[in-house]
Image (cartoon, rainbow, N blue to C red; front, side, top):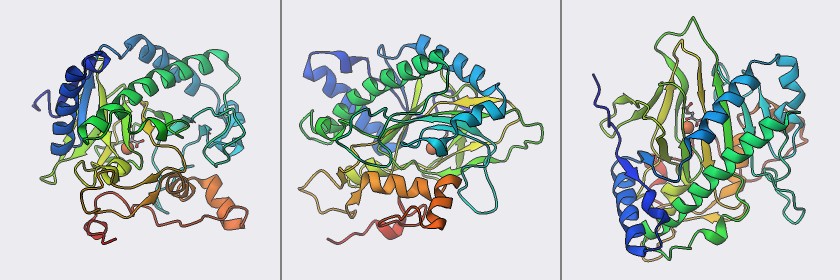
Length: 336
Ligand SMILES: O=C(O)CCC(=O)C(=O)O
Ligand SMILES: [Fe+2]
């Protein structure tokens, strides 16, 4: 039997307080949890379980439809990398793919001033209830995420509004992932071991399966706690914090049970350069063009983008191979 609280649990309710001391208290707890583990449970009065329940219902309804119908909103038809992702579309290695399908939405940018590959109007299926519930959940988690960016700023000893101007039009992606019932599944790897690219991820799955690699090199199961978000640090926050917080490796075990999971990956504005924000310390990481990196990594995993690269229609600038970030010994000792 595994201990119920295998990860630290941080209550963020006090981020709603008008008293800075209260918010500092949460920042200290967040700091501690991110330094020690980089993976934590988050609960708080902010989180509205009813919106999560609605999202689960709408996702179940959506994925139960015919493949042909879902393909009408194939992600390759969108301008901001949003839409339906069929099984096999996303491949991290040439000889295997995860048994999962998803509907990905992104920041639904309606303006024309910014012209980046991940920014633009989101592609929605022809179902107003889908758009309404998914947008509601996106906006809800986005508001919590913005409180967390402020909390990170405090934890990293910056002005509380440090990130505000860098998350105005962030291409943060929400994925509705469906792992279908899989009778062949053994207790093997589902989504392979990885770190997330962005600053941090907030997710809530409907069934167990998520595992985290501990500092001792052991994979542990992450039990679900009711109405409690799971949060993990991604590559970009590792860089912003100059390695104080480490992007934690995780994976999803293949299980027979049908499963849904809804991660929202919080990034900064496309053109914000990700680099250690504490200028009093020698930087351990090279600066990273955040949006460009995100897009380049995406373009190396999604079939429709790989085809565009292969045909010369899409030319990637400054692309590095997959898995070049995250804590590897080789990118730690950066000398400016
Ligand atoms: O399915 C999950 O619970 C996690 C998925 C995940 O780690 C990811 O999409 O990056
Ligand atoms: Fe992940």
